[in-house]
Image 1 (cartoon, rainbow, N blue to C red):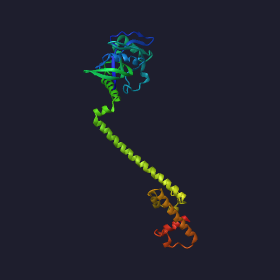
Image 2 (image 1 turned 60 degrees about the vertical axis):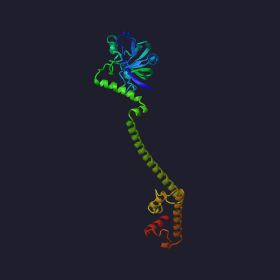
Image 3 (image 1 turned 90 degrees about the horizontal axis):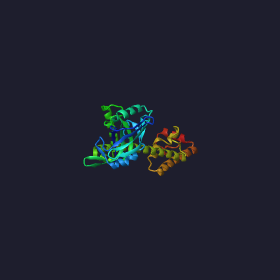
Image 4 (image 1 turned 180 degrees about the vertical axis):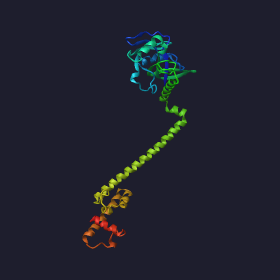
Length: 317
């Protein structure tokens, strides 16, 4: 497994030739063979990592949102070139910096008078192993960033103090890196209770969403059946319940529409509509052929109140 790691190294004890006009500090130390975090870098790991650092961009301070977080353009100060591995010492290179950067003069003063203040912190992905009690870096697989920092023995940024705020910021960056590489299997092993809580919460949310989906599906089915009923009513010459006036509503009453909505299938819907259409036709024909009122016992709606029947007849004639 490849894990994110953050290491610090300074250039104390080194003579670093400086090209002020060209903006170059030559021979800066980028990576040592042993870190202050107790890790040891295998010689072959350092050798193979050399091309990964060539052209690496250098920023001031750590990323505010973790090792792989976005960088502010104002933080960019330079680039590392001519990277080479020195046996038993680590990686070295030339730091090409912007001589017009706001911190360029302070960087040059430190390089000339206090090289212990000129340090780099690299954030990389690496494959780790163990040799007894020692954690060893077997391979560096990706260089995420190289940051210019002050007091590399601490987690503080360039030209900042080593107070508690800065220490907490560096610890937070390390923690963010560990969380980014955390796998589900690792979480299950370390915090099965947390995984169980997350699964329970997810199941509850899924149940709520499924209930809402069922409600939407039912509403869609109801709309589709109402639309189909309106089309079948129109085909049979019956009024549209959505626009029918008060008399016509006697033909397509709410109780009749409810029977249509509860019908088992379309065949039953068609049968009920045809029966209602036939009834309307018979009443209309009887009204035309006879001037006398239809006898109560001959009226198919004799069970309805007289007022309802009269309104129904008026509606169809």
